[in-house]
Amino acid sequence: MAARKKNQLQQNADRQSQPMRMVPPVDECLHAAELDPALSKFAPAYLRILIRHAQAGLREKLGTIGVTAAATRDSLVAEIVRMARESAAADQPSLRPVVNATGIVLHTNLGRAMLAEAAIEAVVEAARSPVNLEYDLQTGARGDRDALIEEELCALTGAEAATVVNNNAAAVLLALNSIADGREVIVSRGELIEIGGAFRIPDVMSRSGARLREVGTTNRTHPRDYAAAIGPDTAMLLKVHPSNYRIVGFTAEVSLAELVAIGTAHKIPVMEDLGSGALLDMSNYGLPSEPLVAARVVAGAGLVTFSGDKLLGGPQAGLIVGRRDLIDRLKANPLKRALRCDKLTLAALEATLRLYLRSNNIQTDLPTLRLLRRTPAELEIVALRARAFLVERLGPEFTIDVVASASEIGSGALPTEEIESRALRITHRDHSPDAIARMFRRARPPVIGRITDGAFLLDLRAVEDPAAFAVAFPTPPAARAPLAK
Image (tube, rainbow, N blue to C red; front, side):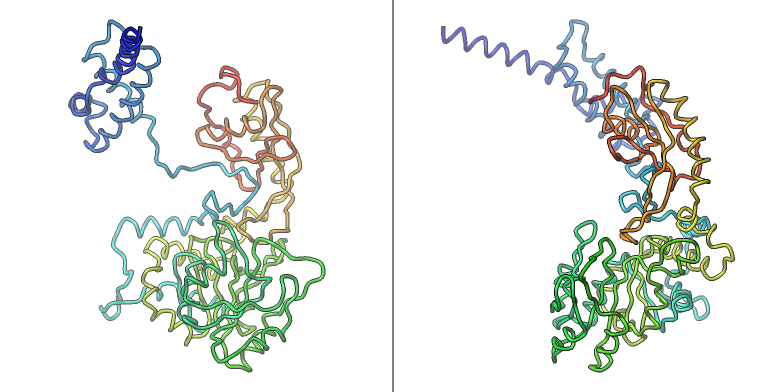
C-alpha cells in the first residue's frame, strides 16, 4: 500500500515537472531568435530578457494545459520566439506619457510642472551637442556652472548671489550643513513639517549635522521663544513654509521680519525654506497669493530656498538665493558637487528664468500659469469635446456627464485653496469606480483620474487638448470580461 502510494506521488511529480523539462534552454532559443527578422536587430542581452520572460510564460501555459503529443522541441522553440517577438512589439519605456486628469496641476507623482516650449528646446539642444557647462568662452579657462543661472536668479529675486542643486530638499540639506554643521538651528515646533516622500525637517537637519532646537508649541510661537533659546552654539534661525497643511484657530507665528530683527540683534543669519516659492504675484493672475521670493529677500532672509518645478514652472531643482557671504560658503562645501545639477536641468532652468525676464506674455508662455488661469467656461468647452471622444470609445453602457469640479495647484502650494474646474463623471451600472479607473490606467496612453463621491472623475484643469481622450483601450469595453465590482 505504501509502495503504491509512493509510486503514485512520484508519477504526479513527474507529470508536474515534465513541462519544466520540456522548455528549451536559453541558448537554443537565443540562436533561433537571432535568425528571426523581427528580433535579429536587438542586442543579445535584450534578447535574453525577452526569452526568459517567454520561457516563464510557456512554463505557466504548459503547467495549465499540459504537454500535447504534437509538442516537439522545435515547436516549443518556435513558440518561445513568437512570444518574445510579441513582447518586443509591446515593449515600452518605463517612463511613459500619461494624461493628467486628476485636477492637480503640479502633481508630484506625475512629474509636477510641464516645461515651457523654450525650455524643451533648450534641453534638446543641450542633449544633442557639447555645451559650455563649465567652460568660460571668454578666457578659455574652467567656468562655474552656477554662472549659467545666477545672474537671472539675482535679477528676479533681488538677491546678492544664488546657487542651484538638484531639488529643494538638497538645498535645505546643503544650507544647513554649510552654515550649521555641529551647531544649533532654532525652529518653531509648528514648522517641523513632513511633506510627500517622507521629507521631514528634523530628519534632514539630523543628516546635515545641525542640531535641532525646538521652540514654542505646535500652534503658537512668539518672538520671545526664539530670543530665549539663542546661545553661544546657535548658528541659524530657520523658518519653514508649511507647504502642505495649515494650522487654524488659536495660533501665533513669528513673521520673517520679526525673526530677522532677532537674528540681526544677535548676529545670527536667518534662513527660510519657502518650499514652492513664487517669482510672480499670483494674485495678478486671479490666483491665490503665495509668498514671493523677492519679498523674503527684501525682508532680510540671509538664505531662501525653493523649488524649480513647482510654482516656478521649470525643471526639478533646488534654488538658493541670498547674501553673497552665505552663498559662497555653500558653494565651497564639497557636498555641493554631490548635489549639483546636470546640463539638461540647467538648460531647462535657464530657459525658464529667461522667460520670466523677457516674456511679455508669461501667463501664456509658462504652462503652469496657463493651466492655473483657465476659466470654468474654457474648461466646459474642452469637457464637451472630450466627452464626445469618450462616448465613441466607451459606448452607450457608460454614463458620461460634465460636472463642476474643484482642482488644486498641488505639490504643497496653497493646500487649502481650490480652483473651480470642470470634469467628466463616468459611471457604469455594473462596474465600480475603481474598476473604471483601472481600465483608464490601462489605456494607451494611460489616463489618470480620481474617485470622488463614489464616481470616477476626469478633471480637465490640466488637459488642454480634448483629443487627449481619444485613447485606445486594450479591448473594446463592451467586449471585455466583466470588471471587478
